[in-house]
Image (cartoon, rainbow over all chains, first blue to last red; front, side):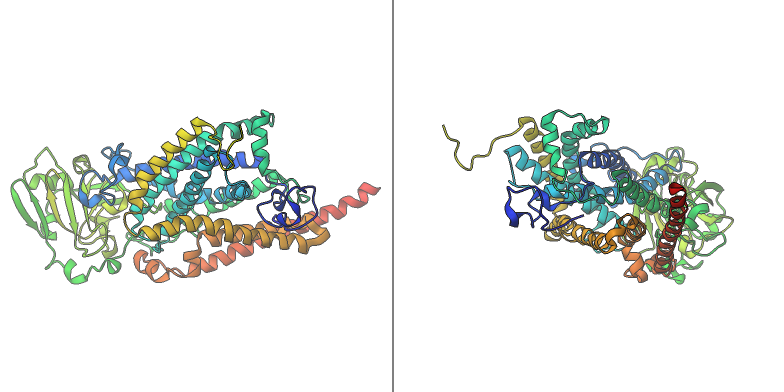
Amino acid sequence: MVRGAVPGPVRTYGRDMRRTPFSPSFWRSPLRGPWFTSVLGIVLLGGITVLFVTGLLSYAAYNPDLARVNDKTPDKGILGFYLFSWPTDPHWLYRLTQGVHVTLGITLIPVLLAKLWSVVPKLFTLPPARSLAHALERISLLLLVGGGLFEFVTGVLNVQLDYVFPGSFYPLHFYGAWVFFAAFVAHAVLKTPAALRNLRGMRQPPQVAEEERELVSPDPDPPTVSRRGALGLVGGGSLLLFGTTVGQGFDGLRWSAVLAPHGADPGSGPGGFQINKTAAYAGISAAERSEGAWRLVVSGRTGTVRLSRAELLRLPLHSSALPIACVEGWSTSDQWWRGVRLRDLAALVGYDGDPPDVFVESLQRHGAFRRAALRANQVADPRSLLALFVNGEELTPDHGHPARVIVPAAPGVLNTKWVARMTFGDL
Amino acid sequence: MRRPRFALPLGSPLQILLLACSFALAAYAGVQLLAGDWFGVALWFVGAALLHDLVLLPLYAAADRALVRAAGPRRRWVAYVRVPAALSLLLLLVWFPLISGQVTARYASATGLSADRFLSHWLLLTAVLFGGSAVLFVLRLRRATKQRPSAVG
């Protein structure tokens, strides 16, 4: 697709210039052109918009404005302008939005790569700027390409637990998304009209045609594949990634997610569903979970209550069928949890009928989400439990024994495991 | 009235306003993005673009070029190698940390799952992709040889 010095019709740059990417005739692929770029551009316009919206929703799902412990980006300023109380209905809401975010992001990778390939000659366009507006646009393209790749790379690395990026994932991916989106909107406004014109038929006004002819090789090699064939390869790549990823959001399809991180089950039986962090990874010892050592400390308006597991079991127990859905895009189907309603625990410490927010602390001594806050609407939901059992058996250590929180539609890490302390009250 | 040699025309004022607005928003978020390890983040941001445009893209383009050249007069059969190779390398690119085993210890300890399957799954998928392509190639070759006599006769 790229080729050096071969005699061609372009003489103005001289023989040497043709050997460098700064010459249009250096770029030989007959595939490049406004139609090819426009198709990919329109797909990305829709796809990246969905990624951005689902990303913002995931950010809101953590309720960062509720408490400092939920907020990994305290200096967000106006970027949190749209935050709202994350609902508990439908109970699969986060499973859907975050499944779409991660699965779609992975599916779009071939489209992004093809789009960048299709416009790469523009990186080398001379003169560097035809006008001030053009100069600014080229600077903006650095934010667009750098930002886009930064977002995709940090996302793809994070779901594989490869934390090599320079900082914590949450602020990097969040602020990076806004930098990228700023450039993305400008690019979309400037380019979408021409892209739509290109797709509606190739009859363009001459001034548009001139700018976009930049992409067409003046001296193309004979084709080895048609433009439609090339799009087919891009689509095939997307389909392959989709097909080998989407299954990590469904217990029945998990076997099909052959390369996705959560494409296998950790054993079988009642506890044989996906684990985000095992007890061993979190540093939870059997001794501190034991019947003799563990007490749940519940504080509120009327003081503090300390409950052993046996005492918890004497409280009214309720069941709810809820999934675990992770920010990494995987989720489980509904599991059958049984335990004490959060609002009943609130009532124990003086909030009878008016459940407030709650601050939950785990036995975990390290980890970003060893403490988490839940909002009053989440505490009040009758399906929100401090679970003691799952699928008819005691919780396993890896699923949070002796007790864990489970809340409908909340991101996985807010469903605190190995709960040690709950403080009810307005945060 | 000659224009000074280095004066740049303004271009579309609307475009300048739009881009100024975009830069302001990007800078607002960018200040926070760079608040921690600013050098590392800037390196990743610019490095991602440079690595893609100046290393990854030229590499796969050159590999494709070499493939087409090696095929010589049989250019139309190139797709039967190009497509499975591209798909296999795409999977490797996306899932490199898991396939290469560089996160094996953390992955196994955090999720309770074995990380052994990724390399073997990728190799099996690669075998399926090339094998499937070979089957299609043979089918098309047979169809071509069957059609040729009938076209003559």
